[in-house]
Length: 432
Image: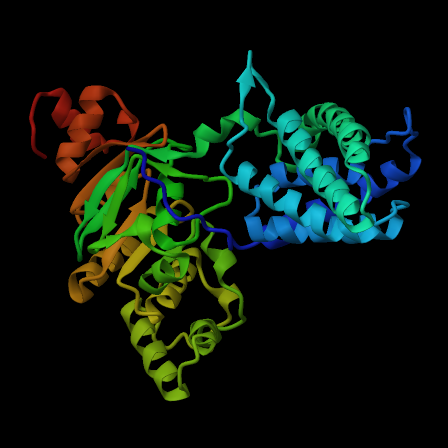
């Protein structure tokens, strides 16, 4: 049975994105509605077409959908020439909420011969719900005859919805290419992690490897509670770390237990000096000054940066910046420390130092460590477990030697196996 995680609607940056796209498309919709001609007394409702397209582009929550619909309703009320314009304040939020619900779950993502019909179906349904509720309210408030409602008003709504569905079908693909960088509508499965059954015990040092795009970062972001927007689901999976069922936790719960250093660790450093960088996150957590000072001293000593408090971050080497980023995360005292390709931009000696540091943190403080890594030679002396990701699935989980043997035998990302191990395997020896 398929098991799905709770949705993360508060992904950083997504609020700005969905608001920006919605405002832009609604503005275009208002202009098009003003200039569109009537055909037999029926004009296309461009507002609904545009906010439906924006909902398909961003896949917002139902609550956000209601907000989109309310804005559209206000715009429609101000420009409407109908007998009961304020009905838009009810009909549009209702329709947008239904649209957001259906879009977020891809219920209408029907494909016929490689052509997605979701834009047409969703625009039609959204327009019919909005128009239908609008004319129903008008009929009830103004006490119009039932015959007028059934044989004049509802048919008009049907034809408006029909025209809208055609417009939505034509507009969605170019809009998707503009706003979503050309990702195809039915490439959603590409961004679904699946068949991941993993149980990482407390104090483990786990490496996650695989080719670029195999799902390593998406998996780690899921565990850290910072999932990217385009990752919709984790299907048919069970992810347990430190006894915590990751897929049943809220984003807040995950972030209280896990901390992540991203691949672009320099982007996480936002202040001028080393001391300020450590203090910044602790001050935001509301800690007392004396506790902040104690933790700063402890983590800087832990990562080998004692005495660097007043150093400018810009003057640090790449390895020192990486150590500082780790120190910032450790200052929050997480149970789980997650790193995404921590040595990708560091020289070999610096890479060995970073893994030596991670090994010390793992052993001394029993901190569970998860690392996405391509270059396995640095991790071999410290890692207790290796996970192999391939095409968004977990293909193998075991010790370093077991997993690398599997990679070699099955020819799955075998190029990542360190040369000395590969030679031994080629000669038929099982241990290195």
